[in-house]
Amino acid sequence: MMIETKGLRKSFRSRDGRTKKTVEAVRGVDLSVREGEIFGFLGPNGAGKTTTLRMLATLIEPDGGDATVAGVDLRRNPGEVRRRIGYVAQGGSTWDEVTAREELVLHARMYGISKAEAQRRAARALDAFQLAEYGDRKCKTYSGGQRRRVDIALGIIHEPRVVFLDEPTTGLDPQSRAHMWDEIRRLRTEGMTVFITTHYLEEADALCDRVAIIDYGEIVAEGTPDDLKRDIAGDVVTVGVNGATATAAELLDAEAYVNKLETLDEGGVRLFVDSGPTAIPQILRTLDGAGIALGAIELHRPSLDDVFLAKTGRSLRES
Amino acid sequence: MKLLRDTWLIFQRQILLVIRNPVWVVIGIVQPLYFLFLFGPLLKPALGVSTNAEAYRIFIPGLLVMLAMFGSMFVGFGLIAELRAGVIERSRVTPVSRLALMLGRSLRDVVTLFFQAALITLLAIPFGLTVQLGDLMLAFLLLGLIGLMLSALSNALALKLRSEDALAPLMNGVAQPILLLSGILLPLALAPMWLQRVADWNPFAWGVDASRALFAGDPGNSAVWKALLIIAVLAAVSLGWAARSFARSVR
Image (cartoon, rainbow over all chains, first blue to last red; front, side):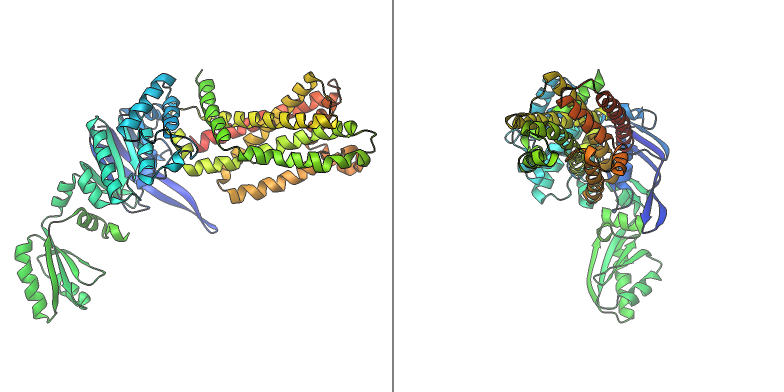
């Protein structure tokens, strides 16, 4: 295992007006990330995603629990963990008035790398991330996508075994996002383990070998995207019922073949059933018998969003 | 040695940033220049001395202390900007020495200060200022210690407050009384006794006395070693405190 945590915990004291309170941001996280995989860490804002990531990257100290990162005990030897990991923050990390090449050289040197070697690596990194053309321009002139590529190049300049990327594609346009996915896959090809946080489920589905879902500071699911989808046994049926959502929900919830039911904001219900093709005629009969007019009816395999909904009781999009 | 190497790395980057965007160095020097040209000429009659040279020999040493104070007290703003840009966090995930992250910045402030102070001293020469090189070096040592102390304090406070809106009023509130109680604009010898007693507790008043003694060609004056001692101790304490808060919040 490249990363293994047991019962990792962190709480913060915060102030809400005059009353002080303790917020348990992460309450006992167990994770295992295998060598050479892209691991996706999913969760709504405030679920403990970034806190967990920052603990693993040595930026904040855990209150309890154990973790091993790249073979080193995180709590006993954070200094050695730092040498073996790369970390790319969400908000960017460059000075405006400095060029990408200067940033890369300095960053490499902060790891104790010699000046000549740092310059060689900077040149290589600029080529690899298709930044050679802009490498000697100041960072303030870069586009969002270019800046993000500089951030990632910085994060791996010392050839770490694991790299942590905090929401690497947030705020990028679709083309830059696709480009970024390719870059992240390239890191895996080079033998790095990649740990990313994201709140885009399609990103986790397309990019990650395995994912974990965190909610209220606890892991609620972990596995490959396909396994997780398979875990929600059966199919998902979405039924549009014009204006009669509440009645329809009540009727269908009472039926034995409905495993789980959610009402949709836009009107209608989403049903988790063992088998869609056999459930649909039953649904039609139930609603028809109650005189409810049917809108569109849709059958689909569960998506990661459905997994999220089933595990946390709400959709990631609305959280 | 790792600490020295790391401090040098951080210092180099910080100086590069100052050279690329020297606006703060310029702003820092404009205020003393105003005083030099617009306030200095008032001093000969006000102090009751017979020549301009004499007036400037009293005024310039204080002006340099003021430059050291105001230039260094506000460096915390730069650190807050760096915290926001994410460059501090990026440094923190590397094994770079935490102490070096602070020392490299303090060193930048001292070097910037020496540059500004040298410029002011040179510009004062046409007004009749004279000073021995050895005495000037001692005066610059004193200025450097003041700069080191205040830039460390400013950075440590910036790390604690993390907001310009909190740092600005605090710094202004502290800077004004310290300036007025240091005898920079007029010597405290002119002040009533109670004001002089209050100023005895102001280390910068000692600094100004020492600086004046040095420019007057009197390095043996007891004010010189006393001020150097007081300010060196305070600088060491400030650096210690700042280093600790860097190490803690920048684990």
